[in-house]
Length: 257
Image: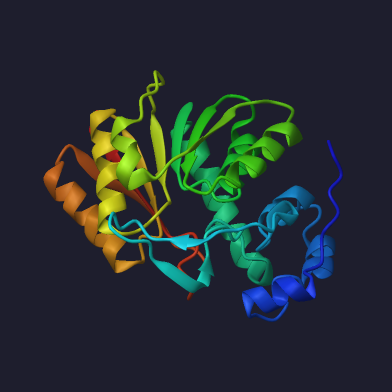
């Protein structure tokens, strides 16, 4: 496998992020303390605000049909993808353990992910499912493909397939022959996006749905509405992520057999 060197944030990146270097202050101690348990240089590279030194990140674009929303404090492509926090790595390890448990319990084969970001979920699929899966992943950020290609290359396979897509507008017309048995919903958390994702899940008859960021009120409300409207699905698992951040908070619903 390719050896990836951990990168140091530049002054330009610090200024653009308007933050201190908290993401980067712990890398030496983390690499030493957790090397034997769970440490991977590519995973850390993917978790950076600029993974793989990708610099042409777009500002967050809202899902509104009539106008684009611009939030100068949020970047559309920030790395971590809601799972890994370098400055709270012990809690991130719990998130990683949660995904190991989920994969071992449900053993998904044909997986859909909405919200690719830097392909950390795909990395974890390879890590815990080996080569016994196929992942279709969707994101509006074209730079996500760079990360998907790197993860496939790193594991010397091509089990992750990326599609660039504006989910609220385009998902309804997305056609693929794959019959998914598991979906991980982690893209936009507004009602329009979640509605499009859940309608796709119903139309494609996907039996297991994992929701990220359920601690956000709008997400949890949509989960409750979905369970009310689709009584053949039940809440089967709840996982709490990094305390105080909501990162890694997951609810899983499953269709009755």
